[in-house]
Length: 162
Image (spheres, rainbow, N blue to C red):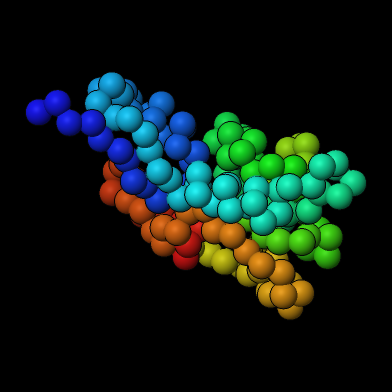
């Protein structure tokens, strides 16, 4: 019909990443002019609210709950502005909930596993971290509001919005 389309998605991926996935999903990317994702919007908010420091010494620190695979998380963080990452709740200025696998360190080497929450829904590792954040009253930005999703093979996966 010659219409151009825009994707509106609650994926934590940046818009550009969502558009690159189209061919794998069987879609012609030439039919789409853009994508708006919750990840992209969360990153814009983070940049505006927390990521405007001109140097690392002034940068806000985020406790970053994300995916173990670094590709999408690093693409997401690259559009968040000047943000430092910490695994220490006492150092954090705010929390980014982007995935459910790890509490990511600045270098990505010292990541802290959050257990098998995505598969089981077991919050025993994540709850104490979030309780400590709540006690400190630090704000949270959730880049993926899904509660649960169905994966291939009729597998239920628990997501960050839960």
